[in-house]
Length: 311
Image (tube, rainbow, N blue to C red; front, side, top):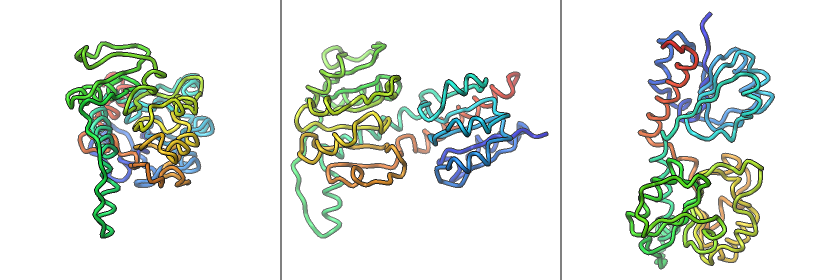
């Protein structure tokens, strides 16, 4: 009997990737969810029961889905986040979890820098104004000499820190492990989150959700933020208190929020996404040709090594 592998990332269902299709040569049948769309729970409940492997994206994988996945041996993410997985339940059922470590780091880091410049120079607002016949000239700010807070110094955060320092900014970072990033000490130091939020002109998030389920940038931290701060989020929507953020944007306490992530994608409410001080992208941080190729190659190899260990 041919073993089946489920493939659900939107970047791979919209256009099948050669690295995924190559799994057929290893004797697997490839099952795709709906092309280019986030699969629903009902669709996953229908597709997963006979699958031994799953190349998964950011779609929520609920306990009901895990219960239905009676043959599942491994979930291979084409990224590094596992917030969408019931990790403890999967491990109890003997399902291995593998990630594509560092595969999309450069793509997400470069988007982060793009969002910083978009916010500093109001690029989306100026572009929109010209397209409607106007000639808006909004005074911007330069990144050189700014204090940039980087929360989370994994593969993405450290790349953002490196680029920002090369552009002439100073970085104040938080990471519980405080890894040595080999960055110049006159432009880089570690601090606690409260200090970063209080003193930095720009704060960018590159960390997982707190294990206790709390909100990292909560109302208190947003209220304590340096006036006029720019917030960048290419990590996870639930890291911030959305209601408190909207209030801060309304009064200009936070100048701009640039984000690539929403709690629901696409967002069902536009209260945040359509706010005039928000710059929004559609979860495209790792959606570059290079990042997709790297992540897909690693994810496919992870499936093979788990399902055919002698390979």
